[in-house]
Image (cartoon, rainbow, N blue to C red):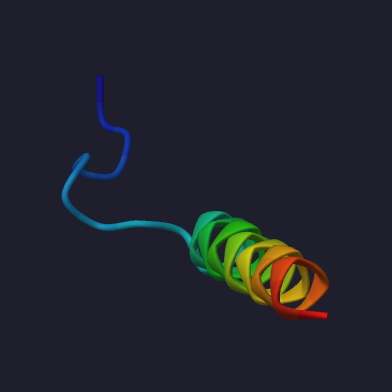
Length: 37
């Protein structure tokens, strides 16, 4: 196939990964705050 190499992530894929990471960080932060309160 003449598709793009797997090492090169499409911008949309990068955005999704960053979004998932942000959600993980936010959820972990909320859980920590909830435990501290």
